[in-house]
Image 1 (cartoon, rainbow, N blue to C red):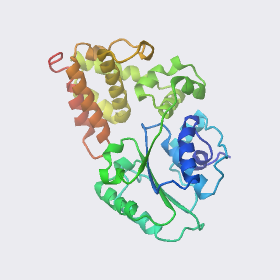
Image 2: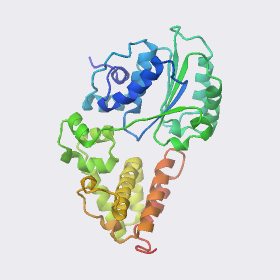
Image 3: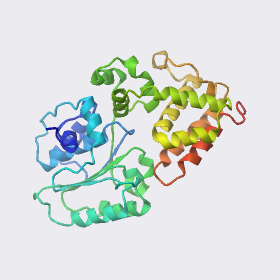
Length: 337
């Protein structure tokens, strides 16, 4: 019988997460573990796996020296896909994530867990609050959480997971210790996936190097999606397809993935133009026709628009209109300063 996804994410660990887990465990063992941590890193880097594994260590009083087995690529993809399937977990783990058909943790969820924290721990030990997509909380939810951060109950630890930490109010960020999760190198990722690095080069560009997203694309054989994005952007730049058509396509498919790819590619091109990319770092990708004639200034403008929209996903913004605004920059007044 297959273990529930939650148990898999608690009892195994993506190999590149070990340094981050060691930092948390050493701080806990030394009595220096603050009551609130802001765990940051790009989407698909494994923040949830790290947080759940560490939460289990504390709640079950596991020895820090216990080495968790590696979480294999296929296990990771399946576990993350099914992570919210109901499963038994420790009674003192309060795991918050956006409810079905919602994009953000609500103020009601924060208030409910705040009330639970004032009660005695079921196991008589620590209590842990884990907030997925903390950077997408509503302002009301963030304000409610701030009260918990200001007056934490005894032996309570909060782990806030954020792809875009700067979207959180400064009042929350200032009350948290920050842990930046670093992803694997291409060579390390190739070993983990069991494929040559060349086989996921397109997926690396598409996802901005996100290991778990690359694993999903490799397994689902959807790496060719990056070619579709390239083709559609080039057609927009040549006025051979309407901006509205492409914006509609991207918004209905996976706008986060499309914008991650776009910002990554624009950033690469800007570095190339500025001469800040070494020969060994350069991608074996030809200069894209969509921005071949754009000035450096316009490239910066396009990058800022795409990056801003990526950070606003889930905030209620009209994604299709936002994508139209970004895409318009690739064919309107091309090459102007």
